[in-house]
Picture (cartoon, helix red, strand yellow):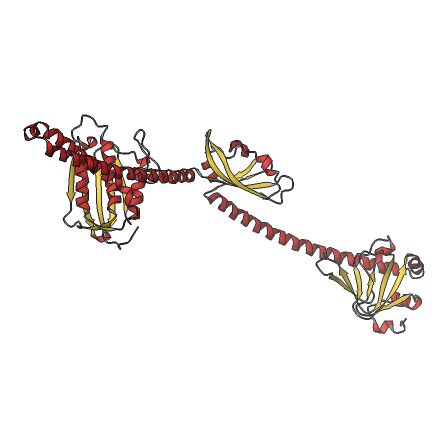
Length: 509
């Protein structure tokens, strides 16, 4: 033990400690980096640093290295509480440089303070200093933790505010429900979808869905579920696509994020597509039958004309009118059949069509039909209307026939009125490169709420009607690069307007 020059080499040691070091020779020396004691091990001795420095290290988590919490030097006591109670070491002590320490057990410490009473005061002073240092450090740590907590709370509030905004503005119905299905929160889209009058009422998720085992579903092992269920709105059912995701962090009362989408229109659209495909398939079959019927009618007309040539001249005057009526009726049926055969040319190419001539011919055909006999036609073609447009003629014929038949059916209920009128107008819009054909009637008109449905849904006011005609018409017009519009007022009649491109590249299919 080198204590002869302690007073000169270690000015931090006071007189009491110098005398103690001279009289008390139980000391140890440590090299830099050497561990003096380890955090958690039993402690029963107090240390006095005579020379050199030591580092006090506090261990962190398994993934974080121990951190330095203090440096101690000559005159400093370490492990004072070990003399009061044999508690585990609070930290690890490592030599920061070559150092020398005195080690006191409880017994020899009591002996020393009897000989050097001032040592007790020195130890108490050391403890007091460490307590003040610890309090100051803890206070700074608390202030820093409070600052971080305040910052985190502010950030959380901003995130919650942003989340609330996103949820509230979402077009999908979004709600939060507990494990038992009690609704914790819902957005505006939810109240609209389910027509909830008072969103503040205590509701359970089972109130919004029919026959849906929500509690059973939440016992599943997976964290999410999605599928189609039946929603309830004012006592009526409608299809809903549901997506459920469990949110962690709520202990036993786990919250579930639920997103709902009303798929009523989607299911109607899917069914409409199926119906159109069935309808078109039926039309193709009808077209084939019409073709065969046309051939038989051709044979019939030929035989009628042949039979008339074989009738004696003196009898021709008696039966000629009847034969002529048969022939004329057969030819009208042939014309009607030809107009039924519109689906046979689905893969036809675009070709030059004189649209006014086609329209005029179809109007003449319609005039001979019973449904049109009490209807007057007005027909006006602008002088600059093109003589030819690139069209699929059979498909365009179907558009015209459908619109004329719709107009006639709209006028049918107006019995006893002489002024039933269908007006066909054709003009050119050079600035927009469009040829426009409008077909209007002075019938009862269509209510405004139904107009958006005409070309998108199966809509009809006719008993037994399928409501597909106008959807098919719109499909043909759009396939030609055109557009169809409708304008109607109740009591004023209806106008359908078809616009087609003036110029178009000629192609197949």
